[in-house]
Length: 92
Image (cartoon, rainbow, N blue to C red; front, side, top):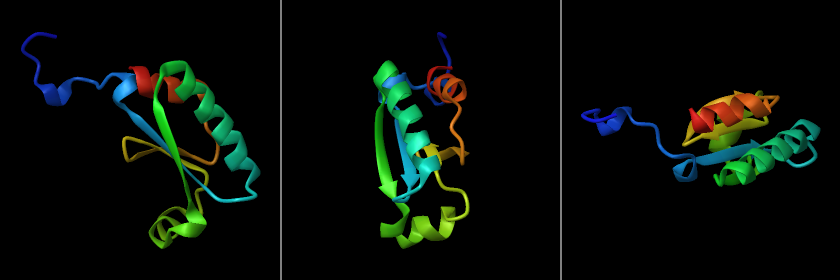
């Protein structure tokens, strides 16, 4: 929209980054990763994963919520990832 401040414009999906915070042997984490991989591949969004067992800060912050999905560093969801909700968050 013309005249709109750049702070209020949504970033294109391709400029976003999704972070999956997980731990080994977590079946919910595996399910979340499958959704994140699918949505990010469909939209051309970069994604990364972080192991909660290798980062004390992440462990302290998210231990009771894993898996956790962040979009551009801000928490989007935890435990179960809804494909439609993640897709909307990246494209709206």
